[in-house]
Length: 473
Image 1 (cartoon, rainbow, N blue to C red):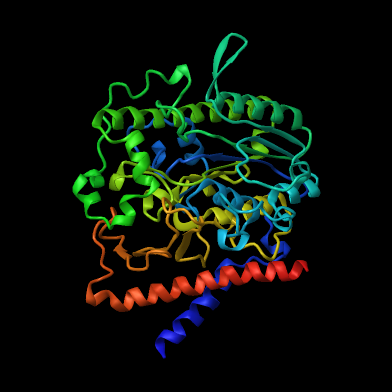
Image 2 (image 1 turned 135 degrees about the vertical axis):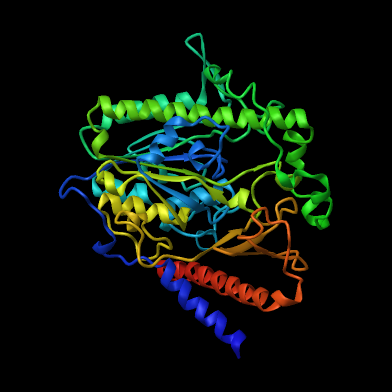
């Protein structure tokens, strides 16, 4: 009987935690009648600890650190899906992958979701909307024009020759962003600035490219090897986890100590270049006289392995893959309410309602996240105590379909096409996720609890997708 009660309880719980009512109580406006400008900065493959403010003593990100010190820093931010296409679709739509049903190899993202995306709704509300950099989601013809008043999509290569000078893509994106800001200062605007960095150039032997002004960074530093980079750890994995794309790309980047040093430093240099662009953007806001009414949100689209577990890339449910940086800088907040670090679990699915709430725009009832403006008046009385993550790419043996539930103590992981493996880690005692407790008898009830919990959440998200399409008929 207890096993039957758990899924029902979880179903109700998830419905309560993931719903946002279409009501003005979800809005947030500090200055009545004056809408803030919003800049949403999205980086590609930047893991949570790849900024100095998160405790990384090697990487140089002074301007990002300053943004965090002057704003709200979320130390436990996660993506619902650790792959760029699905994660970016979630950021546009406010929905989990299992509901919006978009990732690589899938049909284009359904129009009904894009017509409730944050740029569409802000543009309809009177914002001037702009997009710079990597869009990353396949949409139907004509959708782009309905989302953005001004758009500059870019792509690799990272280094370009412009007017006889070598210019890095991050700086090109920064230049476009500054052009948009200067041309939009007389009305409320929302700029989506989506960097390609620090994603590796997968087709190039060098993998990482950075601007010349980052050349000298990290050259005299020895990058420590991850604790789980010991080959014995990889050898103990089941066979299907030894043959994933994570291992394939490990050979591209980390299979020798020399390569590991070079690649991690290249990754850090690319992030330092983003940091430089952030400084230029903030200076532009000051020069244009709009810095005191411009909110800046920074997030990574997914995490990244730097040799941990014998892996490169993302896609799996370990911490390096699903955990990302998240900063909200709102200069309108009084100083006593800024400079805060929050350890509550927040998600990419929360960013979409946050942007709408900041702009004073009604939040669609189908959204599955919650506005992070709830943290503007210190910690909210109620917040989620765990997160569900999933990876749903179809028909790809190199990227297994997997999902997990992580709370403040436990992480449960399972694989759809390989049910013979389940994982359970006590995250408080085992931060590297090295001791799988799932097969120890004393944890059998806990395994069953999390199995039912994941079943219930997955069913809820799938039911939302079915209901969405029933509503459109």
